[in-house]
Image 1: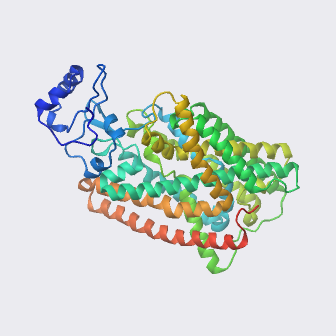
Image 2 (image 1 turned 180 degrees about the vertical axis):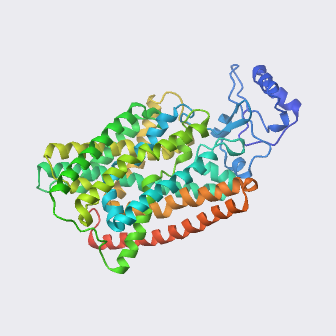
Image 3 (image 1 turned 135 degrees about the vertical axis):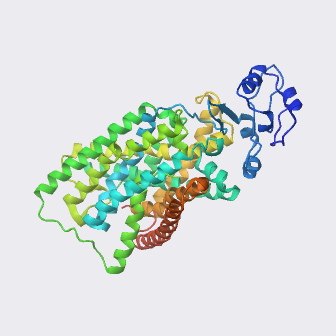
Length: 506
């Protein structure tokens, strides 16, 4: 009989009578694992088939026992390693199946998404040469540091934390689990809205290249982009299934980055001297600079590192570190190039979508914009994967991903999610504001505040006073930055809302 709720520890004779698979019992005994380390073994009766066993640690956090549903209970399992037993939570998606190199390309796809075509206008224009260059370099170093902190906690406490909320909940408790899930959901939702806006803007740019009749407007293009994203989401069941699409994404990124760089250099060489002064009054400069700071952290961070790390093969920490080093070295170079060259070519007049500023053959610009559309679709799937994983696991979607039942579920669940995202994107298509607000309300807390405090909390006994002070300084500084950036982002949205109506054709 399946135990639907986590049970308290039973004596060894009860455990022995429940475990009719002697191979598993012998394996546990061989590894010298005492029965007192486990709470319960869950079996499935009938037909001689067993359900995967639930082995819950005696010292398990209360929030884990309280929030574990029946699906999680019957699928939770232990991986026995040479030195430590690592517990893996239940999930409907694949884990530990990808090489570090594939994971590195997942990260690089995010950092070189079509968002890079906006950084010249949303980072460099508000910050200028000194602020922009120094800010990007510092943001790179700080983001690498913060992400390594999170990566090192992936197997903290003998459990593999395959979701950000799982890690926060394990360290802090049930309330933090819910708060982190809320922050991450908002973060990923706004990022995905930004991708739909990007794809829609690129589609409109292609249309305007050949026709200027204003029949096809931005809201229409956003709706078309959302439909493409939904079709892709239905066809790709989980993050590890991207496979060859990561190579396609890399090629698409190179196309629009190379086109943007070449055409920008061509325009920059011919153009007269440009104005690189930061525009606006003293008050507006303060707000735009603060907003640009949140764009800096947005450029480098996903807010879903544990979910990406869950796909990497063992050893997960070592392999994830390799992927992060690749992302923050070779992976950032294309983004640096297009950001700096775009600003050099057009100065303070640089568009928030660089391909709108460049001049060149129509077919070349069309190719770059089409590449941006398709790459945004792939990138959105990466950033939506934690939401998809939650829905698939919640409703017990297992087996052949292309079975009719699973396909219909994805049509309803993922199609509905993208439909809502598309509606919001068409309603408020202000890309720069999305980036600023996302960085302020979720990327700062998830990537910098939580990362430093979770590491401090987890490693408290191993840190010296100077290290403890360092982590607290990071927590306080980035908390203040988060508040300031949120105020600046809300102001930007208020200003743009006055200048543009809903469903605006920008």
